Length: 65
Image 1 (cartoon, one colour):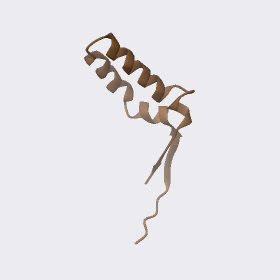
Image 2 (tube, rainbow, N blue to C red):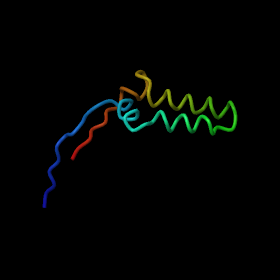
Image 3 (cartoon, rainbow, N blue to C red):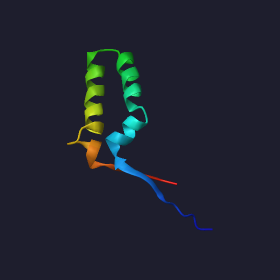
């Protein structure tokens, strides 16, 4: 049997992350960080995942069903 898929959505990584409540998870992680160094590291990772010049718009997400 061959499965057939259709594209349901196509968009940027940043849109996908925020649609999945990424910001809420980051807020929780930031509040739980043990010190300023941990919060700074988390901030840098968020920038890498979401900024247009980083992965935020360079990577595309495709959802199929």
